[in-house]
Length: 338
Image (cartoon, rainbow, N blue to C red; front, side, top):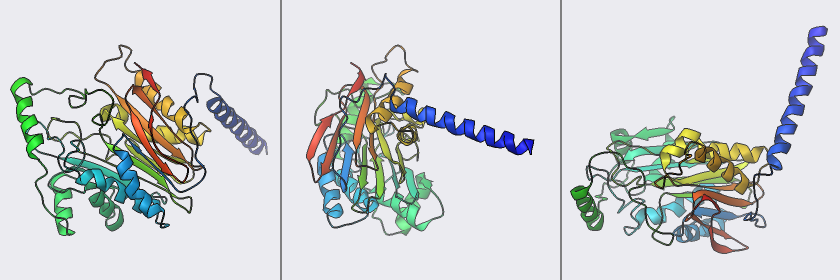
């Protein structure tokens, strides 16, 4: 009997501690909701960077027809994947140090199903290969030659992804750079239409269900075989249909170290707003870099089950696009460091 009383007592204490923790996260004085934004209900689609506006438009067509969120995000991110002028996603992406374009992508639906590909070559729509991994295999991730063979076996077309412009820029880079790792070598431009990276997209459909997708050609001139956060579930993308979804853009190594998108979703589970949850993840990354190194940039974007969205970045310049019945707009994310 005493054992049972002890068990009940401990359970009550644990519940009280959890409620206290939720209250602390929800009302933390160090978290500002100055830029916190809401929308009125579903459907809604949000995505990283200015060029997410065109991707959102494609996803919105499907959401408006009552399609599933996961179908909408796949369709949406295929737009920048096919755009040869976008040198950070799909066709036209900047190559690695050996001159080879390799793609990473992941996708996740409202039921917890997920699929991803890493170091995929010669296939434009990495997101659709990731979707097929999710739908047709017992696995979550396929990489390299295995991912390519899987794509070929399932009807995808083999193509040369290295455009003339990206090839010329790579050859110029080779003249002055040593074969050593450099973070964010591709992205030292000021904020604006050209300042973009990975596209991450999150959506909620008319049924209130969520989906997310993330796709990239990765860091320009990366070491052969380097994989960032985009294809890693919980790092570059995470969806929990009970709570919300999050995605990231920027230096993938930092996102992987913090399992960033999962951290954002779990913070929302504890009562944080999307922006506050994103800020919490950014502050954890910032704590590892007291010198504020200029080559490090990360941005998180989140959407909760109420249709509320928000973002936060380590540095100035991270933007995101929103499409709903209420608005079609590009926002500049609040940030921690100048």
